[in-house]
Length: 282
Image 1 (cartoon, rainbow, N blue to C red):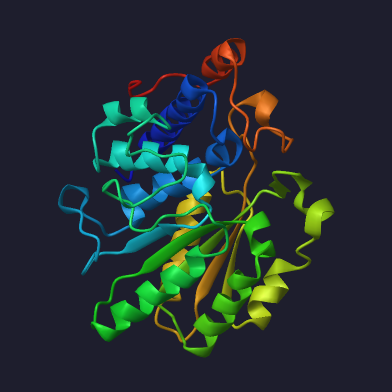
Image 2: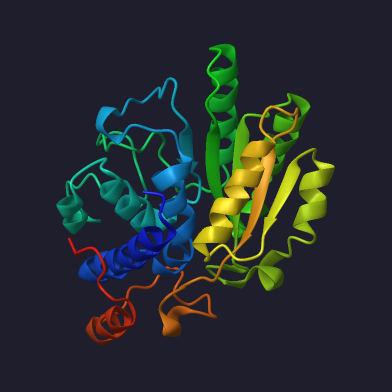
């Protein structure tokens, strides 16, 4: 699926999945999930070289993706299901007992599409770099991708990993930062300012791609294209992607309060009124 209109329709449907999933169990993280929809929809429907019907943990000769900010599992699960990794109907089991769709992705349930447990922030870049180095050792020319929250960059392990990636010329790796400016306790700037992220990553030896609107599917695709043009040039790559937490649901936008709060019945109905059903609910 590479048609822009189809990707936009899928993005709207994924947003419906997200709000319905967290509402059904009165728990989950809708804010960041809604903000990252276009990124994951574009990645799994045209950018990533992958085979959902033949998922393997090692992913030989395939591109790999690692979700580091695992709390945005609702968007990850929706996109995986609608890409064909597991039945869409399984979204009904989100955060329920004995479900493969835990609040933070895990591996022991054997959910296709999930290669690492994530949710302990700061670890995904290290894992992705290890996978990218393995690709190099195996003469596998595939690309490794990872996604991180901006608040997650307050974790020191991120910067240790970034330093390692540049020093070892891990140039088959594309990291993306969801730069929405908000985290669980408030605005990132007020909790712990990240300063000039572009300058920081450049100082650490990364090629930096800036995406001014990560909620525009065309701009997301363009940033992936630009990033891939820098593969094999001796530097790891990072996309700084500006998004809006809660994108698509007006009362969730412009605030950090929906980072980890579920809508009630009335709020769900209001959200669904703003998100037209386009492909079909699960």
